[in-house]
Length: 272
View 1 (cartoon, rainbow, N blue to C red):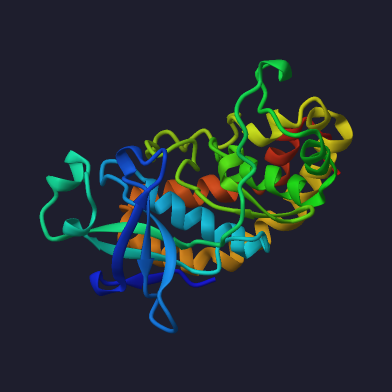
View 2 (cartoon, rainbow, N blue to C red; view 1 turned 90 degrees about the vertical axis):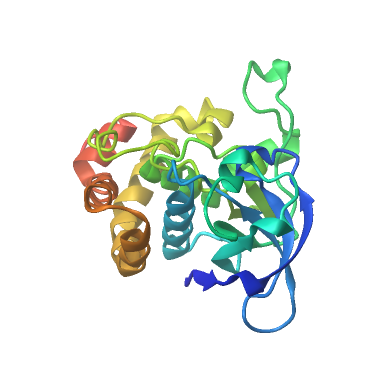
């Protein structure tokens, strides 16, 4: 899947902030993707001091390469500063009239976001029928394995959209590689454990030997080929956004985590 690069002129109008807009000034906007009508889209602005933008690009490309559902349009867009109310101080201090942001088409699908429930012993609360659906869905096992691979520590139910029964769409990959603050040094330990909120939400079922075997098989069969398919696009964007040590560390991290020895260690499985 191609990620577009859009100029200031493609950003047509600001619509509204998101409830958790935060330092990224996340909001909805009207965007022209270069053909057809204007579309409503989500836009996030990441500081240059972290890797949120490159994380979004990387997660989106790898998910699409695996055949997981992602928004139909994605772009890096230059957002005019004057168009965004209450722009964070870090953004106001940047030189120039615009800021690069991550932009994805609004797919008009509800998220699975529910409040934390003390009755579930600290796990994410879900309506019973949705919890059972998630436990049974093969696609969810694929998503958990994907998040384990890319070290996505922020797959909360607000960025898992339900587009049909047992059919889900992934958004928000700003926290892969263990978070936005990663460096070449932090990626050297390629098989350290990372939090997986979706897996935790489905525990104890997701921790059983049978379920872990499903995750390991998914990783063995699909992650290496997906990385190969996405590699050229990844390197094209990484050349723009990362220095050489960061590019080498990110590539090694993803590649190492597709090796059978690391997959078996991650899921506590014996080699096939």
